[in-house]
Image (cartoon, rainbow, N blue to C red; front, side):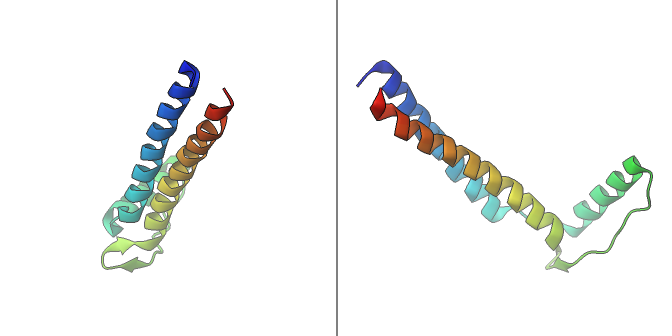
Length: 94
């Protein structure tokens, strides 16, 4: 195995761990109702608009903000997984 293939294999493992960590973080991501309302207020002030406080919360967690946070972490997990697979596929060819 060439040195480049070894580095790609190590990078693949590292990206695999990053992917798993991102997906694990997504599974626990929650945004409290208070934090979500404060963020909406700040965003509205930046745009010069009145904040829209319409929301749905469950057990104190804002569902829309929680889904957005989970989507961010899931996307990051998929990004890292793609690089892990890419490096795994290329390493044997070198």
